[in-house]
Image (tube, rainbow, N blue to C red):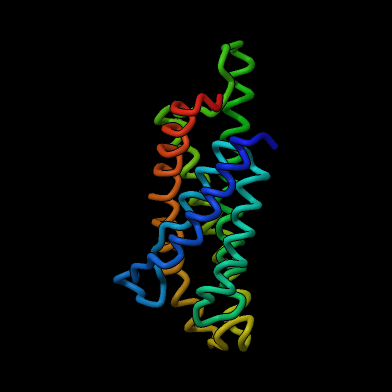
Length: 192
């Protein structure tokens, strides 16, 4: 890993930890918290590679566990699953876009930043995150702590639409902002 990448990993990891303190309750479900700590993870994922983005996401889960675990001890790991599922959607779109760029024999097959690509990446990230987290929530919320909240089946089913909406809207602002940040840093540091 070169010095520039190492510096970016340290900066992005530090930002995720600092940003864990910024939480805004969802008005439709105050137990769900909108936050911004996922933005640097996605930006790092786009800018310096999937391994680094995943490593930062893992470090952030550990930081959340220590600094701000929430009501559920395993909550930070459920957040990690949400982030990874969202990153998978972005990864697939980036890989397809890069392959298409290479097929067209353009000179710069780096990160693609056009509006259509960002919209498709955001949409696929939303789909992956909502599906994965709906399955996770449906599966684990019925168990007692530290796995879940020991909720009954009807309450779990009733809460799935609001948690799905939460996961969709969180990805809806996270992905485009991360692309903007990655593009800005990339053009200023000439990363690609």
